[in-house]
Image 1: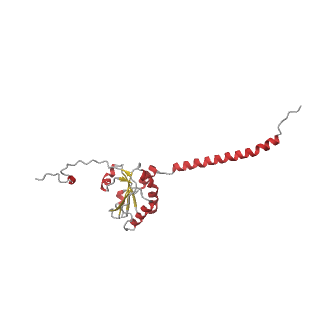
Image 2 (image 1 turned 120 degrees about the vertical axis):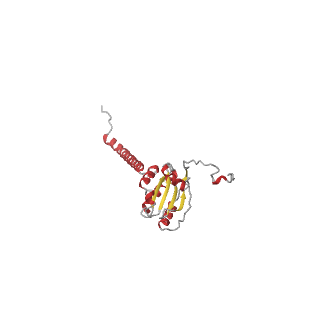
Length: 200
């Protein structure tokens, strides 16, 4: 009595195409997983949002230097939490790389009370708020809110060439900001009191 044993050559031949197909599929899955992991890792290492803003602020020209070095200046009022500032950060950084030799790039964080005099002086009530200063440190234009890169670049080219800025009062989407200041004034001293003073 002989047992009916399966023919080993036939069973190997039948499994080979399926095994090769499975191995190829598994290899492809592993490669895709590796590529996705590398992409995520590199994506996390690329600075965006608040991280890029902080790095840009650290690398920015100090205001005191910018006001005394004879170059025109782009001064940006920003905050790390400002989504519009975060959205513009890559473009502003790219423009700095391109025009930083001709224009100072200054960044003033509105959350730092050190800059309160400048916040009040330039009437910053929405950010990002950009002030364009000529070589003498005098404001020649402002733009408020998100701006297309092309608008910012056209203004920088004109600023560097001492020409009139084409988009001198541009405005776009902003993040609301209110300076942490309360003013105490006597209504009789307030020029906006509209004649409520008693004249003797």
